Length: 106
Image 1 (cartoon, helix red, strand yellow):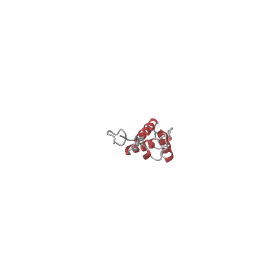
Image 2 (cartoon, rainbow, N blue to C red):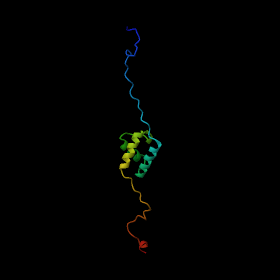
Image 3 (cartoon, rainbow, N blue to C red):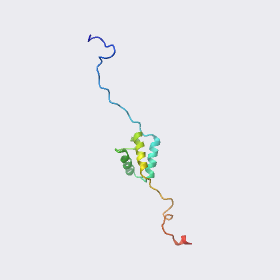
């Protein structure tokens, strides 16, 4: 009976299943925009500062924001949200001075 075909596929050779090729979706445009705004709000303007902040939050090397997955982008946004943004003072240095001048006393 070894030459007979199996009726239910019992005798088919068992090959190992291929590894799961689950690919994470890339970060969406709105996530990229929020990441850029979060970096701007923290006063990170140079490429080096921005990359260090993103890599620190993502816990891996990142070539660009587009290299992040959606889950990573959410995690980075959450971690950036935990650090306070730098407050930029409204007005000029003249407006932010501590002491009154003779003009202010008039």
